[in-house]
Amino acid sequence: MSVFLMVTMLATAYVVVEPVYAQFDFNAFLGNPIPDEEIDGIIGSEWDDAGNHPDITIQPQATAEIWTKHDETYLYIAMQFTADSSNPWVAFQFDLTSHMSSGADGALFGHDRLGPNEYRDISFGGLGSISADAIQDGVGAISVGDSNLIAVELKKPLSSGDSAEDDIDWTVGNTYTLVIRWDSNGGGSSGGGSSHLSGSVGHRTVFINTNEIPEFSALTLFVALTTVAILVIALKRRTDLHVSKKR
Image (tube, rainbow, N blue to C red):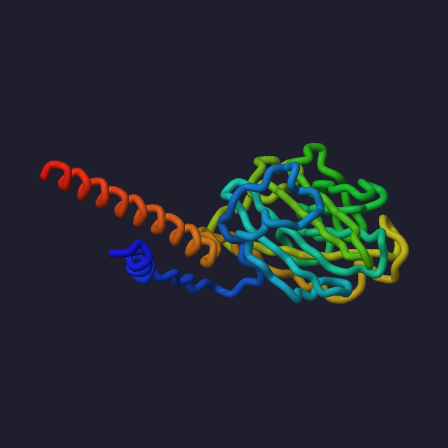
């Protein structure tokens, strides 16, 4: 039997069927860890095993592409969109659904007061109130490309154990709330006309999936089956050669 035929027979015996889940907006699949140094505002192949969500409307205005995954320890989020300024700030709010909910955990990128062109792990104190956490548990980055193409990357503990800073305590297999906002017209930003106070809150939901992305699982399986098949063929040839020599 050829290697190709053996792999085909084994592969067809395994069909990747994605389970049916309750409704959610973002699927954070189980994926590979991303080293801190690769959280650099450049979205690359490290996101290939993440859930990909194009054409997502974010407030106050813009359409974004968003990637989400986790490695059972950290939550990873990347986002790319075109702003109306080269100096916006971008914020994620975790849990709670009103804008800048008091006591909510957050991630802030490029805010001129708290960290120009940098990331800050923050908490919200109500509308108009934000503060940087004393312990910066997350790693993040923001970059501004041609035509104000904004990219942000975030690596954040699912559960840091830091309740004093209102850090999230998320577990695999559950769905949680995420609010995304950005601003370009002052109060930590400049150069544009987009206000984070405009539009509806537009909160989203994130599912912390127990499974890898289906196509990533299928590729891993195919490589594994191919390796097994090659080893089986090699072992058979070695056995046949040994028997032939004894004759």
